[in-house]
Amino acid sequence: MRVLPILCILFSTTYAFSLYDFGFHGKPVNGKAIVDGNVVKRPNDERSYFGLERNGGREKRQASQNPSTVTVTSTVPVTSSEPVTSSEPVTSSEPVTSTAGASTAGPTRAPSHEFNFGKYLLVTDLMTFADAKAYCEGKGQQMVSIHKKGTDTTLKRVFKLVDPDGASIYWLGMKKATGKTSAFQWVDGSAVDYENWPARKPKPTDKEQCVAFWDPNWSALNCNNKYAFVCEKK
Image (cartoon, rainbow, N blue to C red; front, side):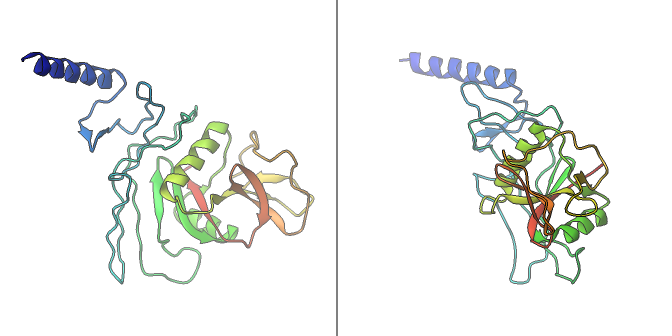
């Protein structure tokens, strides 16, 4: 009759050691574990854990009819079966934060939703390219420049987590420098050493001179279109 309790104890001990071996150094929370903000793979389970916070897969938001502050908290599991791979440190133990304030005119107004992810700031409010650039600069940052496939993939997945109902389109910090025949350049002046165009690169036109990520590739679009965007601390 004592066999069952003994087996339970052995199972619990083995499970605890396996969690520790795979980097789970905190107490489980809601059946998950906090992993110091690092991407971790569990045995026989390729779901990764980002340093974003959530409860039970649903955001907790507190807002009145005249919202002043919105807070999103808890840990978000990546729902993709593919592991996130990136040689650039884009993970963070920072919680997802979101603020909503009184709206004012101009590109520097406080957006309804913005999410910190390491050195990146993901903004789900829709703005033109120029307004998005001005907003990032107002934060002391630049629009994101991407130099590795891992960064491109990770930002796509995190954007889907924080904005699952969005269109999976967001501005990158790339545009043509002087007109339709000029080359695309990063607005922060960094080298264009990675690209994610579809098989057919964009044709030179007068209107489509700014670049957005449009899942699964980059796309040249009208700079006056309004999309979400990503800022980056340089």
